[in-house]
Structures are given as structure tokens and as C-alpha cells.
Length: 362
Image 1 (cartoon, rainbow, N blue to C red):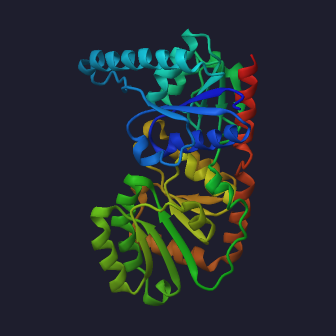
Image 2 (cartoon, rainbow, N blue to C red):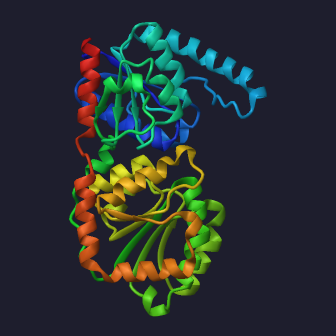
Image 3 (cartoon, one colour):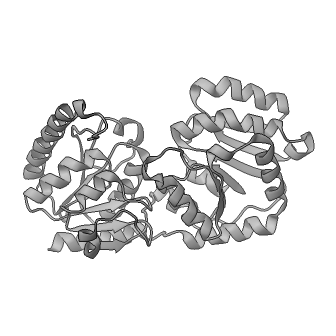
């Protein structure tokens, strides 16, 4: 018999849903039921989410840069708020935990109006814009990094550092032994936009290497479907041993099998790299709001776990030389892997679950 129900609210992207899924898995183990409130994108990222029910709640981004859109978007948010309020009245959750993105807006506001305890968790080193507003309404704020930039002053007393929860599929690879050297396993991924960039850029990087520098590289790379043929043909022409896919369901296992990762620096990526313990060359998403990916990458690199290369300054020849040099420095790669593991927080889901249960008790 269930001990009660928690409602988790999150935007429908992997960055928001993955930590929500990790909390859902932990709360399910403790005997609680889970309901999820999110948007239509859950069909792509939420297939393995352990929710008794998933509720699609309307939401919208509020931006003053396009004032003529504000009335319509405000109406969508209000409609989402009314729907969330009705769902919460029916489900009667012990607490509502939000993970950012504008789809978390209506549930947290509805929880506040219904006096249901609530918490917002922010995955990044810079607080997201939706969470900045919601922090004023929520009873607690949880952070993935020891320092959370952008937290409203009135919410500082609510802050708890939990770390960023990672899914069970990643925890299975926790602290996996660093691979022995021989061939060099290189993993490249970056979400939709990152896959687009790396699919265009990395073939130029490998082309800038001499054949003997490419020898022995076992490449695994995420490539967008529309770029697959061009990237595959380029690598075959170079004689590269490459495993390409538009999406890898077993990404944590592939991280564990790699000597080095080249990636974006989304919060879930940084969290999984830390829990598994793998060094990374990070190319933060440019033009991201508040430079959150850059801050995430800097935190990881400052810990000695990786290297930050802004996309605007990347050049194929120089990057090829960097990767070739780094590949030869086995001791440095192993040290960075150990630093990554020290940076990780494998108990983040447990800590956030503790906070959620504590809130429910109030």
C-alpha cells in the first residue's frame, strides 16, 4: 500500500525530466506513488518515467521582448494553473516538487494557493528564470551546485544543497573502473543542438589529424538523423572506427566505456559524468540564457575534471592537436577521471527525497 503521493512537475526536456525521474525512482523505492505534470515533449524523454499518471499541463514562456505575445501566453499559463489546481485537488499529494521549465509554473503556483508543501530544484549553477519566480512561492529550494547564482535574496533561507539526482541507469555505472589503455575510446554527444554542431565540426577535426593520429580511436558519436549519411561517409573515408546513432538509450554505459568525453555541459550531463567518473572536454551551448552551461562547465573544470572550450573559439586544426596531445597524457586523463568522481553526488536523489519527505511531514 502506498504511503502517499508526490507530484513532480518539470519541463519536458531531458535536462528537467532526468533528475525528476531519479527522484521518482527513489521515492518509489520508499513506497510512495508518483504523478508527473509536464508538457508534450515527455513523449520523447519520459518513456521510462515511473509515474502512476502523467498529466500534460499547458504552459508558455513569458518574455517581454515580444510584448504582443504576452496576453495569449498569460492565458495559456492561467489555463495550466486551473488544470493543475484541479489535478492537485483530486490527487491530494503530500508535496509538489518542481524541476524548472515553464511547465512547472502552474503546478507550483497551484500548490502554493492550495497550501500544499512545495520545493523547486534547480539543476544548473545559474538559477533558471522560471525557478527564480517560483522560489518566492515554494517552501524550499534545492540546488545541484554548492553555489547557486541568481537565487532571489528572500529565498536564501530556503536553500538546501542536494546535488543533481541521476537516474538508476547511471547509478549502475557509479565509479566504474577507468578503462585500460590500448585503443582510445572517445565519446561525443550533445543533445539536439550539440549533435548538429559536433556532426559538422568533428569530421573536420579528424580530417586535420594525420592518419597515425587517428589510428586506434574507437569513436562513438551522437549524430542527427539528417546528418548521418554525410558524417558516416566522412569517417569511412578516413578509416575511423565509428559507432553513430541519433540517440543512445544506454548513454551511461557508453560514458563508462570511454576514456574521454566531448560534450555540451548541461546539468544532467555534468551530474552523470561525475557519478561515473569520466573526464570531459566541454563545449557549452552558446547564447544559452544566463550562460548556465558555461557555469556548469567551469565548476567541473575547476575541480580538475575537464576542459572548457567555447564554441566561438574552436578551430579544427587546433582542436585536433589538443585531442591528440591529451590522448597521450594517460596520467592526466586518469587524474581528471578521479576528480570527476569526486565532483559527483551519487546520493543526490536520496538527499532530495529526504527533503521532499521532510516537507510532506510539515
